[in-house]
Image 1: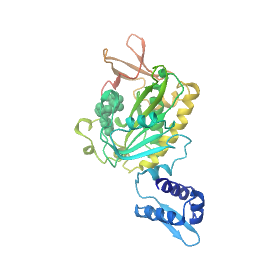
Image 2: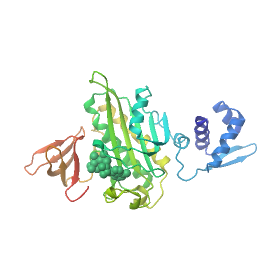
Image 3: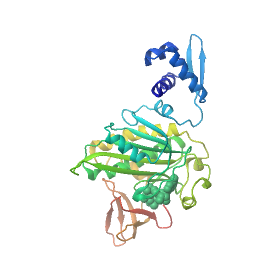
Image 4: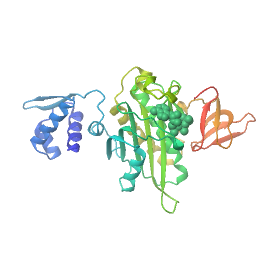
Length: 335
Ligand code: ATP
């Protein structure tokens, strides 16, 4: 039934004009009654659909920020990103869900989307606050053929795609805090967590999951827990506009598909680096590297072709900082 809904919405959306009941039946191989039922359900959910005898149905407007499997799927034009999509109202965390689907053999691009998470994860066992009704939480399954040491670059590719999708949809200018956070006006709006699963011999990648959390429609700082009020923000708080999560998610998946394919061709960031660095915060400015083996200050000189942060020490020595165990701060604050 869900597929019928997505398919009917897709037909109406793609046509932009009247689509006859018969055309819908033929295209989807369902009965007239089934079409009629789905149209009524959609209307009940707030979709404005006009029905005109002998002409058919026309989608006039979708309800504001409707966020459901059908709404997302009916907007997708990707080849593989999100083509297989699982939507949950609530889940623990979309990363373990995606891993489970990958272990069950689901294809490259399979995507898990949730409206809320009860145990959203950040790096190194941290928590990602994941309230319902406001944000995007999704994880995409990738089945790369490259060596494990290339995997950390996927986080940077995702950061770039998400940063640019946000600019496109909201008009906000986004910064990337190397390697995996996106900030707007110095505060964090996106976190990304990439995890690898290796083959039993531990020499090849079995699959990789890239999870993304975006704060979209939180209305004020009071919507965040006290501990992150100073450092977190939402797209709505920064732009003053309510943002459609389905539209933004569609743009993220479309851009990621494109950028990932560019990365896959060379298995480095040569082609994407200039775009990534144009978003990189603190470039040519002082940074503090919070390395568990010893913290130090330096000047950020951008990223290497393989995604490490280049930090120049006072004595001129250039250090390549590998993502993983390390966080980076501006010398005078979070970014
Ligand atoms: P850092 O931001 O300190 O460099 P990190 O990149 O390792 O750390 P992540 O794993 O991306 O951090 O995110 C987890 C951290 O982000 C949490 O420890 C918390 O401080 C902050 N955080 C948690 N939930 C949210 C949220 N919804 N919006 C913004 N920040 C959040």
